[in-house]
Length: 313
Image (tube, rainbow, N blue to C red; front, side, top):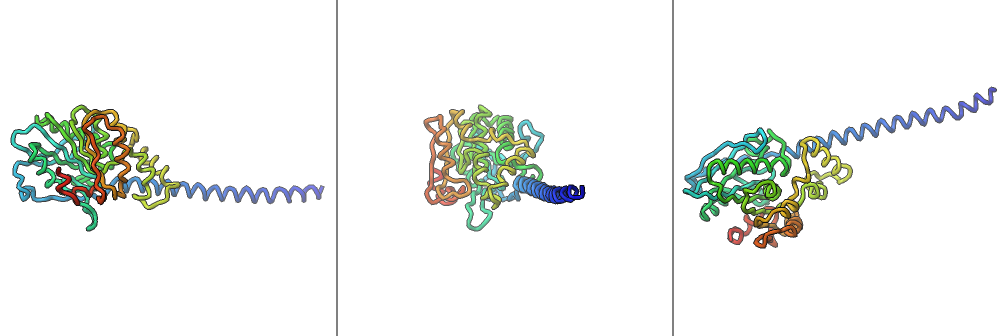
């Protein structure tokens, strides 16, 4: 009997120790998963609240006299947005200018001495010469409203463009409406063309072709973190926190459903959103007038900055 008891001890004690070890390992695994989840949520929140450039130029110093700062509603969303309407006599044609991620209605890029910068008021003068009104506005989470609303890289921002269109139509200056966008603004504009019949043409400078695919393969560029496990966790949390429907932010799909003319502009040295993204969109063109113009030495949104004369043509 004593031998049996000793035998049971020899068997049970290691098992109990093993169970204790497994429990400790499981606790550490759960803590690690929880830490990764919290860190992933932190990344999403930080990424969706960029430090937006809030630039307030002297508009009249550009020779622009007929302008008005306005507040308008995002479409189907209880969000007020800032805009600047620049009128061109009695013209009923208007171009909407859409800035990029972290930018504002008056300035695109230029965060560092080496980065490209686009002065949207200077750009507006090009369209004014062509007989268009121009409408500049801040996307949600940008400009005067930086940090107040989560930026969704083109999903909810489509509602902002649709709200801008409604505002223009309410002023009776929307017989022809064109949109020119940069980076996130370009991708948002392209993603909007199958959601409305009021956009007549789009000029898209440095867009991505599909938000989910772009983030999947370029997350490291924005966060500096390894793809695994952060890519799937960030994509999932971004979707859950902001209810992002990735299928609705796919310029390549939206362009394939629309027959309006699209002009793509992309620099071949773009490392933020690679030139190949525009090549993918080009394959979806449905209008014979649509085209892709590339600049061999241009960086992200740098074509107008480097080649202003060629860009205007």
